[in-house]
Image (cartoon, rainbow, N blue to C red):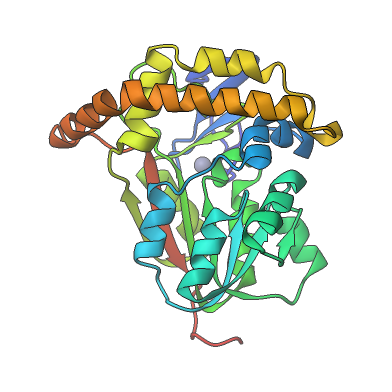
Length: 312
Ligand SMILES: [Zn+2]
């Protein structure tokens, strides 16, 4: 088997099987990746994120809040890959960055324009963007919870390095495969996610793709993005939502929003109901896990394109 990141050839059995996919573990870079690796198309993502894109149900998680509290530089041109409906870009612009967003989900970008008045948005991935705008350079590129979705993580990281000005920063987050999570995290399987990262593999990946001053932090156990999802799965609170999603029309042909609006109200009600029931247990569990020294659900990394802080 050939590693999806470091091109190391190794000979070992898969460590897990799931729905026609095999999970391999590269002994050289510590990355785990699913085989076969094939990204679903934009339509699949539009369907998967239809609630976020149509109803604007979104929030800032620990990773984007971590960035906004302590960005590596405080102004300049920022490119966010996988910007979704643009909530993070709106906040980054408020801090003083000139912002550009990429997401191959067109519905999400429409929502970003309508809701936040963002304009420099492009429905493409980073490699396509580099081809269409070969001369554009940025001071910061952010990729929150993007890398694990990709079938070409190394190529995307190298592209990000090339699109940074010398001395520019890449900031990203991915799920932490060593997080506390008894049982299966259903959101962490293909075709949703294709790679599983540890602190070591993420550090290796950034160094391997040409970044300097790489730091990888293990995120804290949070009740919003860690213990709440665990309780949701453990207590089967995700079942009614999955059932309701069957009634959503395909997003690309969605025209009359009336029936969808009723469904969206149902989704919001379900979410609020879950939050009321689970917020206190989720919070207490997060406190206990922190005291016990458990790892949080995410990894947060920064790396710098080597060179002077000028465009060369
Ligand atoms: Zn490898």
